[in-house]
Image (cartoon, rainbow, N blue to C red):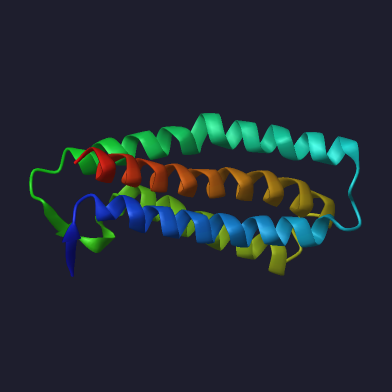
Length: 138
């Protein structure tokens, strides 16, 4: 199924908001026994690392890639390239394995997932912002 190329930004927005919300939810639920200022600070550091080193760059890269498509209609899964899909699948598998095999303590899950989920959620918001910014300017 093909969609207008700028709608790929909206699809990316929904995917990342849902993923971010789910991961953030796991982190927050796990936080109940570990809520303190040090862990909150560590979550903030995780968020800042993932936002500035990974997700802000990812949003910029894919927004520009989508803008530069020559054809106005693209396959709906082209909101990401192959490399990004592979990374996403690996992250999902690794995250599930960490929790189901208890490879990390709950405090790690609380701190790491809260920071990571927040960065993912913000990436989704930024994809949506980029979509509406383009939509309004056209």
